[in-house]
Image (cartoon, rainbow, N blue to C red; front, side, top):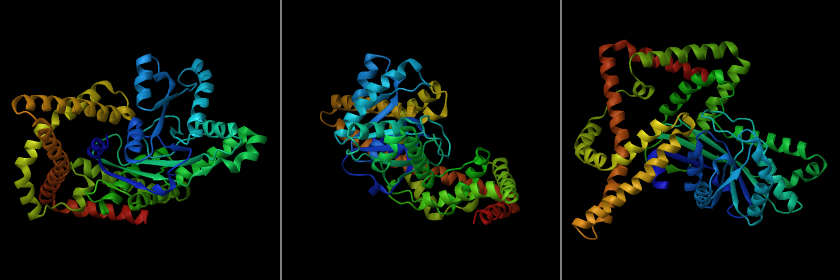
Length: 421
């Protein structure tokens, strides 16, 4: 799965991993903007075995319960899914307490609902109930640590985008012991407030929904001013998350405290994005619209190899995308179905190749598939370069036809940056 996710994402950045305890009972309290992709990513790029929690109504048959159990997925029952099933939570909470007493890690999405957006949503009670329930059964001697996990996607659920994940400082339940024994509801409320604040402090959090479009333009400008390197795909660099969070915080400040300045920013971003769309351009091509000679030569020489690798490996990805296009109705689940379907179809596809090749040349199948997968991986990285090359070529042609356009766009861009500074 890690291999698949390295193809799905252009960049995977983790920060403050030292806040994730290497042993003992832990609850990862994560945001939930991208459905099962959130779970896949945390499971693939962290070392400890996770128990994932999913809505209880999914476990509606023996086969599903078995299959999900093999994937370490456990149910959590919510009134919003089925009021009748909420009673089952007593049994479920006891199971989670047992896991925590055995020093396991539970991953729960504390917002309780998956929504594709750049903001932290209100905390539900599930995380607090599991954490306090486990501690209560152990007279607050268990030492459960709740780690806030911010999940930040550049453009979910699209492929070849970035994800930035941060582990906040662990919250220990011991400090709430006296309050919980006196007033459990108040203790859980204060815990949720602390968890919410911890997530907001490390997330790209655009507080007003009205500012979403403004934020998208500003964040894209910020990224393109200092784009992340293509390799390595995985890093533990916090710089881009910090820079983009600074932008979202600035937008929140302007919206709440400097209305005139915010209106000016909104007008400028609207003008800028409209001009880009009218000329079929993007921000990256405005910053640097020309392709280097050496890069052009290299891409031309590599084109035959790229084409062959693409043709040999594209089928499972193409079918996975077609399936996602057909069955997914909401954007939150698109990436999960796309990745899951492509992964399963890819396994079947490569297995079939191994069998066919071995029939023709015994013991050669695995080598052929390894070569296919290896070249396929690099073809994905090359694809990014070809798309960038075509975008810059198109921009260069537009700017040659309308010489003043690039300067006008750069001027708008600079005005936006000055307001964000």
